[in-house]
Amino acid sequence: MRKLLGFVLALCLLMTTLVIFAQDDQKVIGVIQKNTTDAFHLTINTAAIKALDALKASGEISDYRLYDGKTDPITQVDLMEMAINEGCDVVIVLPAEAAGCDPILERGAEEGIPVVVVNSKTNNTDELSAAYVGSDDVFAGELMAKFVQEKLPEGGGYAHLMGVIGNSAQIQRTEGIHNILDNDPKWTMLAEQGADWQGEKAVKFTGDWLQMFGKDLNAIICDNDDMSSAVKAYCITENRADIVCIGVDGNAGPMQMVAAGELDATVFQDGASQIRKGVEVAVDLLNGKEVEKEYMIPFVLITLENVNDYI
Image 1: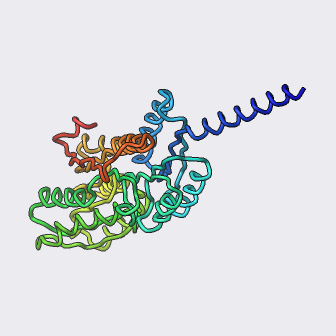
Image 2 (image 1 turned 90 degrees about the vertical axis):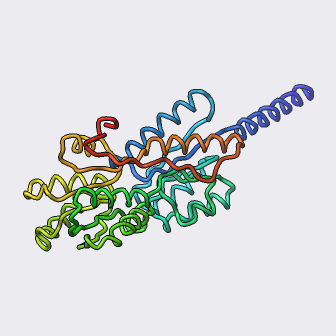
Image 3 (image 1 turned 90 degrees about the horizontal axis):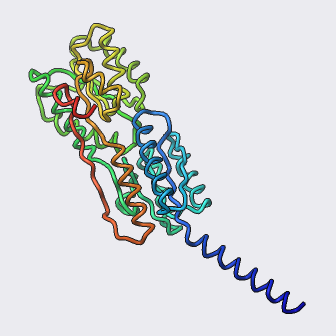
């Protein structure tokens, strides 16, 4: 009986050890999405799931967790706590706001969990992230401004519709636009307004500006394509197809509008490549490999001349 009891105890101890070892051997990636609603981030989310499914099927990772940030930094910070509690070994985050999402990286540093920042930066990304994957948003703003200059060489008045105030893409695209047009005496900024990346809000502001500025309004530069495509469609209905509109992202609908000669241009942001690279970096971190601090995916200006190469 004593031998049997000793054998059972030894077997239990062995099984417990195996379970602990198996748990330690788990490789789980958490992804704190920006949202699950707008077209650009749906593209990113789809690419992320495809990449993560392939990694799980091949056994390179044990599992992954997806968290909907609802474009809210407070929600995203709470989701970081959930990712920690659910045993994520590395976390990918697409920040909703530069300052508001700083605690995500702070918690990662406290818990020893590497954080890969994708698409836009927090204020402490350069200091605390394991890596950043994105695109040069200052350059995107400059591309848009230069396109407006080339489209309307005589100059005029322009308005700027910004994304969520405080998001790094909003900050940097605004910087890029001002880098170019503030130094061009032929151009005057008539208005600059945050519209939270939303087409409906952008159209409301545009309606007000058409009443206020009339023919003095010659161009509307938008921080994303949800706004630019909605604004251009509205301008067409108001018999102001002459107003040049451009945005950033290169989503399917706006690309079709460019191909149809309706939307003037877009700046293609390869969000799918951004997140695929982010997942690749996360896997390297799980495997103890060294990674670079920053990976940049180039923006591309899309016009009627080259849209069919990207559509």
